[in-house]
Image 1 (cartoon, rainbow, N blue to C red):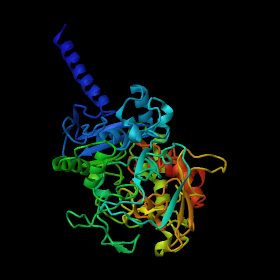
Image 2 (image 1 turned 180 degrees about the vertical axis):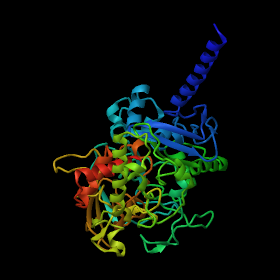
Image 3 (image 1 turned 60 degrees about the vertical axis):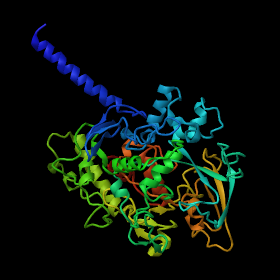
Image 4 (image 1 turned 30 degrees about the vertical axis):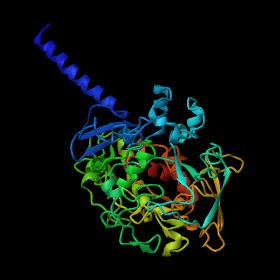
Length: 505
């Protein structure tokens, strides 16, 4: 055998090793050995998702984000997978169920099943996780925020429908020794966290009170990290996840807490390639796309205007002659559609009505604005103010569940009745039916029933399904919901333009 042949075989071996390492990162298991590269990409149906780890490569073995520190075999990475935009997709969950016969720690009985008392070997016992990507979140009732002091709620709560059986369970439910409300929610991405955690102004426009401060530093903190904003700092969230989702017992050390927070803050993520395999950015344009733009972008910029758009401008995609010459006609048409979608998102006005924490804070009801009015944070499209809003996804009659009255939801349904002495819900009165009371499970206030904190738009193509309750299987279903909810009257082409726009973020 010639030296030339041996050299080719050696190179092939190296390539195979590199490919194998990459494929192993497709799903990262708790305790997995190996290196998380400083830059990486993962395929999805819309192209590729790109990452930049600003601190360079990380050895996963021994790092607290990747180690199973609790008792059920999970690590933080179990529910925050890089291939799934640091969340977890239904597609991945179903694949893991098949590959591990339901034994992966992600399916832990505590919150990876509909009810810990159900037969855990049955797929049906994990239907909310496998079909909607939902984990069970068990919260005390009455509410008990971070300070440990029980809040006297302004409303009573009653279980109307309990398809999982957990809310009426004598040991786990509302009437147990430790009264608990269980709701089911999607895990949020833990990348681009410097944007997510950017501090709110001193004044909280949603409550009319001073903003919350970090008890350790005294500095104003962001409140957009969790669906109900029950924790305000990444440290608090990590500790809660350790004792809850990981079923830990001894606590995280200060060094472990520091490492987890540092890793989350140095990780930047965004879609990087289109479905034809071409990079989305060329010479830094469009300026709002790709992980490098996330790494270098300015934090906490209010961008719901034509001077400083949410995802910058897509001018290079509006005309065929300004696009790279090597693109196919289909790619050029797609880019033109994305540019139109961005313009719809930024400037297409419609009547926003009956949305708590939007219409009742002085803007008027209805108010004629665009999507960017609420999704106003540059580069993420979060709300720069504390982002909890009742857009109607969990509250009847606009909830995502029953478009036909005789359909049954596979989520629990609660009846919340506001006290006569308390202000009612601004648009739903004193009796509200909901699948998730949202922020109200923390504050105990009627006005907060159904309010959910907006989350970032990055990596959408990698982490279906959508909404806090996983009700939208596709981006088109998301667009359809808002088109119906606010009677926007989008054409089929406009809907597709919006979907294409969202898919490249």
